[in-house]
Length: 528
Image (tube, rainbow, N blue to C red; front, side):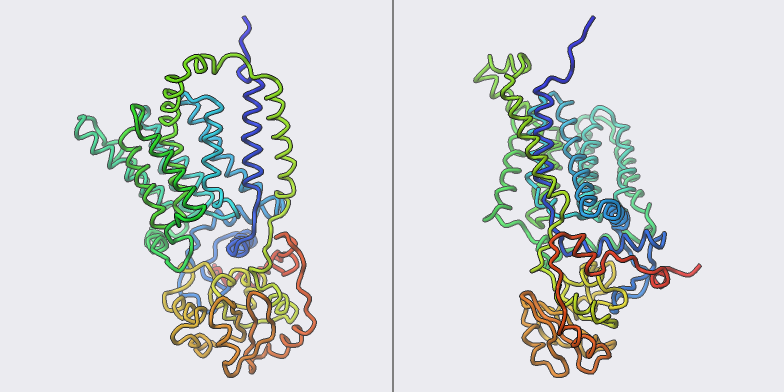
């Protein structure tokens, strides 16, 4: 007896079209200010074969252990870049993207949705938070593990013991990114709602409570043990000075994306196919989160797709069946006409071809970086200390550290105390006692200042400092009595900034891809 093949030409065409759309959309990548230092720290971990005990890249870093909670993500990013340069990083990002989309499609298919509906929802969900995939960041690991967490919670309705995988997910997640607390919060919200329901139905929720406690305990599975809990608590506090920690803006594209996700959530949580109470609680909670910080929008989209997606598909199916019953009856029937299938294949092939240049190059937007200043410092062989604008600290750290130590970089509370952060912020913004950073010991030899703040003009008239390099974004100032002043001035007269537009080429030119000697890295590790 012969059986009909599971995969029809139109099925393969739909999958190819969905895959090509994701590759084309998600492969467009730019180098943000965090990518440089993430790779530098990952390179150091690989070169030294362990985690650093203290920071060696800043002269204002706090005493005590350096809690790098993203160490595993940085190590994976570092190895991807070492293996495939720009393409390696982009392929790592695409792997995470397809992991999310594949899980969504499989989940929706298992709930009875057609392949076309499953692919449409999976691809649309990714596109709704596509800005989160504009670069390569540890946070993208959180998107995948958040999806896994939601799927495990949804599966506990029929198979309660599946929840024992949640602690495993948390143990991995806590070494990748701080958003593990978001996943844990969803687990708690789910089981609190489950417990409230059990009070009315008379069912037992004891197993769920044990799984929640095990998930909490799994957070200590990291190199710092229980100490990371206090660190993570501070790391997720409000950061109004950072754009991604501000509420979403409804007037622009962000508002449209949020509104679309909210419409899907309402559609999926209404009617007779509405999800279970715990799922409703999680969707509602994640819907409120972007109103506090825009970085939570992807979690709301994922919660809607996983928990409300199956109900949304059934709801739409009922509406279509009521209006066009004949069309619904034959939606799994005859194959599509070959011209339609052929067009889908051709479009998919075209999108894949157009994606190749995007995969091979991570764009460096030169106007956002002090490339002329760093090229000058590299040519001068500058060492010592440099007062830096917050966003540029990680860029300088990668290309010139640790011989030239920064005052501040985006690692924030992982490295710096409140006093150091405050004095550097005053310097950056040109507020209050703005030049305290310049006169306190140890004094910086150089200062890298953005033109976006008053500090640039204040530095031009500050006694004892002179401007040696100026470009469209900012300027490099040198302390006149510094040991490196003469060398920097000499280099500035003949420096030629690189014209590389791709990340790997720019990083190689500026020295960021150069491995740090083990003798230098040894200062960051405890002696045996």
